[in-house]
Length: 188
Image (cartoon, rainbow, N blue to C red; front, side, top):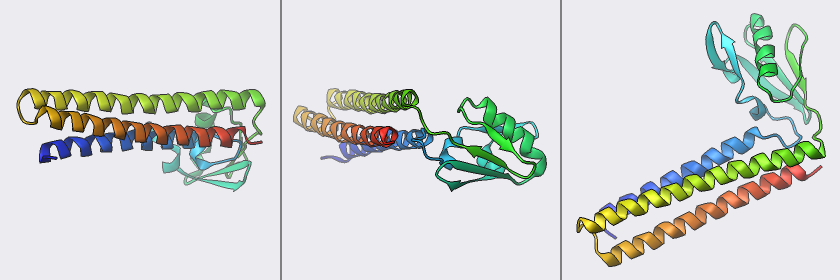
């Protein structure tokens, strides 16, 4: 395989890995009934007029499987953090005791579990779309190379097959990640 083809293949693999890594990050945010500091990754706090990630203004810890504790670095941030959590639509009720914020994570209902599974499947489908888009773009680039005479028709066929195998590999990894998260959510 010539250098240019190798470069396209590495780029395709990097882009597909990025889609899988993004999926992993998104799945961490979806709670499976257990408290996790990742549940609050999307919470943004008004820190002196700037929208700032919660993790940049406070320590977020889990004390047990159902409790999150948020210890702000500045006490005057308690109200802003509490407001940000309430406004984040995560369905969590913060309890501010004047020193820190405690959040009791309620057990998931069957209906909520099914909703979360649907959300997980949507995230998985988004990752697959990204992977397939990468395949489409790389194949289009490979066809341009063949038209310009940089690669032969045989090299094009082999490269397209390699891209398809990469696509299949990463799609299966997405399916596996979605299946594991779904199992985690549905386990009571």
